[in-house]
Length: 112
Length: 114
Image (cartoon, chains in turn green, purple):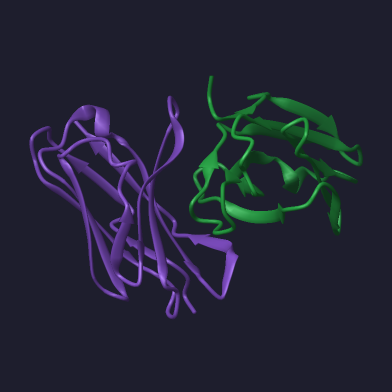
């Protein structure tokens, strides 16, 4: 079992819908959680990070964390075709974003 | 700032040859990370440096891989000898201890070993 699990997808949603991306992790000592977006052929770029249980909102993006269930999710509201990408969940035992264990990613397609 | 700069962007080499990948981190960043991304294994952390000192190289796959950071603005990842299974995209990333919640990735080097 991988340390960070994501549904590989592809996940397809219509434009304007809510996209829900999920991630589970195995290390209960994990402290920080990051979501990256990676367009095809490009490098990962950080969207959000979350440390505390609950929700964290940033524009159209909401990260949700439940440490008891070892579960973190990313909601994208009002999905746009430009959101079509692979979303990587990264988990960290500390707070340094670079020292993370990544999931394999979920590919999201937003259809116009 | 131009961001993290990697070179070359693409490298095709024959099995057994030495390959050197280069990275220039963002100025002022004191952490530098080398990652490898493949379809099979995803994005894996190979090694990272803090203030030019290697801190954790547990992700380096074998002795054929080595990394150096001679100064704050330059790092190399070397594979000698290269093998076809080393084919991957290699990313360099950097971050600052003042704001370590963000790691910035370079554009990557796509390595093909034939």
